[in-house]
Image 1: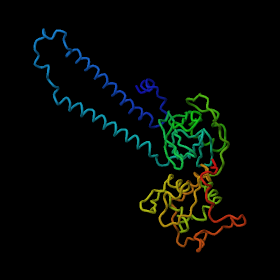
Image 2 (image 1 turned 45 degrees about the horizontal axis):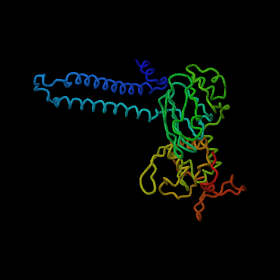
Image 3 (image 1 turned 90 degrees about the vertical axis):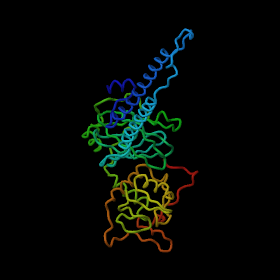
Image 4 (image 1 turned 180 degrees about the vertical axis):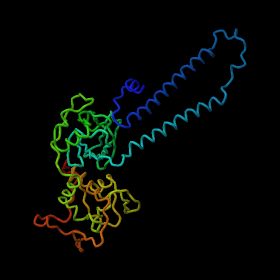
Length: 389
């Protein structure tokens, strides 16, 4: 029955753990609507025949029941039945929505960056790919997505997953593929003249093949079992052997290169900016009142637009890194901060850099001496300047 309805409604295959449940809700709504339309048609036909107006009314015997009204119980029953269906669908749909929004614990995190007109993927182990997302079968995958120009939308029809990708912030979605294969990815937000060309693929591999791919081998890419999406893909490129550097290590290098350690510490000791130790998923008090959870979205927003949500008790000295960090560098910094979630300040912990008491800015470290760098990164270029993409 499921396959019949799926084909009858021209739906793609169900390739994720929650795809069939979503389709079943869809089936119930469609079938209920069809049943209701048939019922109305049948009842209308009966009334049309039973209560039709005669061409010779003077020959018809008087009918005292001709002006009878339906009993109120029928009206109440119809209203209660419709309300029951509405509430039932809402409860089921809300449960499915929450299941789709909350990724399981231990999900593999992959960072997705959208820009005109391509998708870029960065993996925690250090690999990167363009237009092809490699994932193992049977493992939950959480996508942390952002855009570098305009709004895009990441849509995988076979997974029944769609998520808008917004510039300047991170959105998340997750899936768990149930069968190896190659599944198309489409952009469903008009993003310019190349919108129809902004395609990608999710390549679902056996766990062993995925591990080999991460290790830089090509055997896992030669033969992938399961259905194959054969439509020509414009702009698809494979990935070079992944770098054997974890995201956390990359985050350390990026933080050193960009001067992050001049204001932030990793051991919990106080400094010019908030410490990264224990920051991830912590409740951060904000200037002006209120709090925010330091998740991926908040951490990224603090890098790109630090004036929006200012940590209570800290100076407004951090510049914007919009256009100065690419998607991989931003993801690496987020992963570094996440790795410090369980770090707690040690007694007597010292800050690695001292602040200048007269200016409130950090001194130059050894790496910056001799190059003429200031303690803080320079302010970003004006809006009319060129933005690195």
